[in-house]
Image (cartoon, rainbow over all chains, first blue to last red; front, side, top):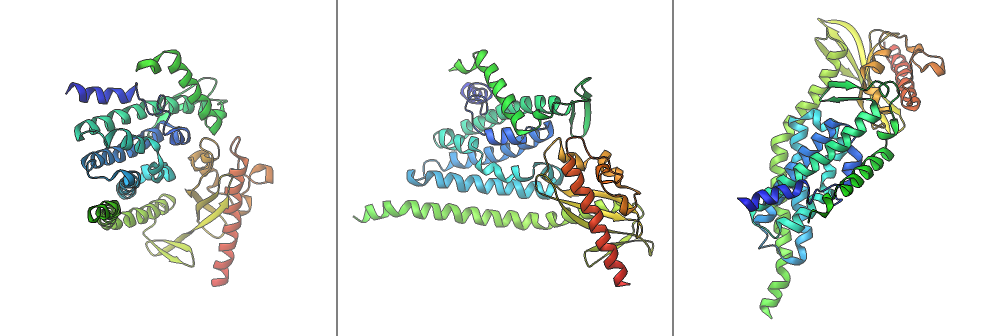
Length: 204
Length: 178
């Protein structure tokens, strides 16, 4: 049980996908414009990562080494398509707001990285713990980035259509650059620098 | 020798098997969700029309124009307009309450910059169109009645121009049809 807990916790800080592994930066840059998108994206990534980690861990001993990457990609693409269809059918609003980034989970390197580096070498329970930890780490990173970008870039904060607050000066004149792509780079760079300063990266 | 051949072929058989299972699985999921997805698309269209015409009881779809009825009486038209925005095409559902006046508009799909051009979907912008005469639909800079969004003149203008030109075309085709 202790080791499972360790696999879970390490995904949050020690191998945080965005800040430490520096993986999945493309969706992290692109969709972190609002808290809603951050949470929706996390949901999609979670389902795909959990599914692919479980299946790959189950078949890990049967997969011939030379075709392991194509095998992982087929498995990941299958889960992404299932998630896309299910979201479209039962969660139309979320499907609309994520748009193209939902099918693009297939090329999110976090998922292939966990398949290759973890699930293909570890038993099923550890792989589930790993998927959960990485998802939480991904979610926290996305929430941090999108919190700053949405707040600075639009001057107000809202989540699932509920308005939280409007900043006094920025509400009138928001710093639009934070909503635009350069803002994503700025925010991620500053957060990375902060993490490094705090010494989190020397964790292991 | 024989064992070696088998070893060489096994990866091919394995990946074929994986793809086969994946295809089977996907066709099952597709079978389960297809009807629901079509239903959602239909609901979305219906939802947009009823939001625009709360009194609607039924509609006809002819020549790309929705004709809206309330208890048998014609109360308006709706159709799709396509504009070219800053980030790609913008599709807008336009409602007319008669041959000259806009009932309302709704953005069906867009890929404008989030936080800037994408604000064309917000009610503060969309509501500006309601009740305008078709000829007044243009951003103020172009001599119309629409306040362009700050920092998103191209997106605002794309919507206004698409609504105006498409509405004029549709009205013309309706008049010719009668």
